[in-house]
Length: 252
Image 1 (cartoon, one colour):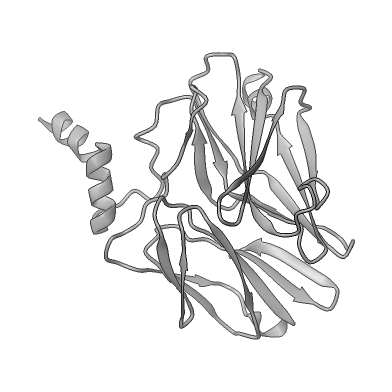
Image 2: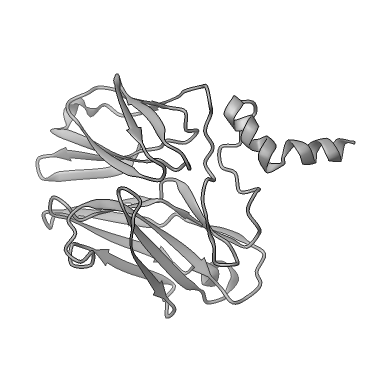
């Protein structure tokens, strides 16, 4: 009887209902997806305003299992329209990819990208790529930040699955960034909707909306406290703070 109750309790449909009602929710849910997963964070690329992005990633299957893997990196614009997809088969243990406007075929904007690892071996594993992304503005020094939020999953059948971050139907969650923004010239926060439906959120007292899997960069002037409020369980920002020629990039 207990096993039956547990099975029902953890069934994807019941988990979805638990999340909507905010009853013992599961914030990151991969129970509805088959094993042998490659989970990717939603990484930000920037080529606008003289930005250049560099991505440092590791061959995770080689690092943890001693097996070589192939890597697929998929790029989207801020409205989640796919721009390009790259496949890498001859990997080093540690790899670099530079993303500038030439790489993006002249596009000077921002968006997201995702990295998925594939191996021919039948390895029962779930790996998450949360490697480092660096941002350079006006050819100054790079500032690096590691992956922010798991968003998409590539299964062993090479199918990309979404909707692993839960949200509540009724209840807002507050996310207060632990930083005093007042001492900087200005700051920006990057936000991505990791859910499969449109969300509304508040940045302090201003309301915004963001379509599914879309992203936005919002400029922040001199504020002491930044508070984010949404029904998404994990709505974690990436922060860009500017002072003179100095740029600091980090998680919220």
